[in-house]
Length: 101
Image 1 (spheres, rainbow, N blue to C red):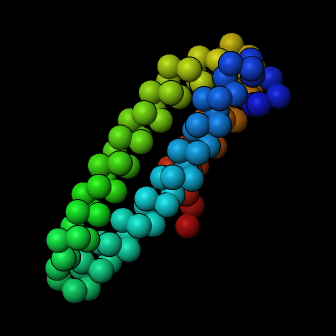
Image 2: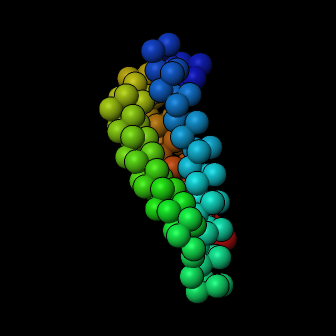
Image 3: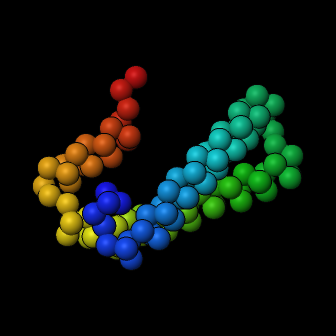
C-alpha cells in the first residue's frame, strides 16, 4: 500500500506499525503476569501495578490505533486502492482475527 498512498499518510502508517510492535510486547508482558498469577495464586503489589499499567496502556493503544485507521488510513486506502486490493486487505484482516490452527 505504501507505494500508492499519499505522502501525508506515511507517518500514520509508521505509527500503526509501531503500535503493532508495542501491542505485541504488551501482550507478552501481560501473558507472563497472568501466568505467574495463575500459577502462584497471587501477584505482589508491584506486579499488580504493572498489570494495571500494561492493560490500561494496551486499551489506550488500541483505541488510538483504531481511530487512526478509521479516520485516516482507511479513507486514504479507499481513495487509492481498487476493489480487488481492498478485498485482499479485508481478507488478510479477517485471517488475523481468525487464524486457522
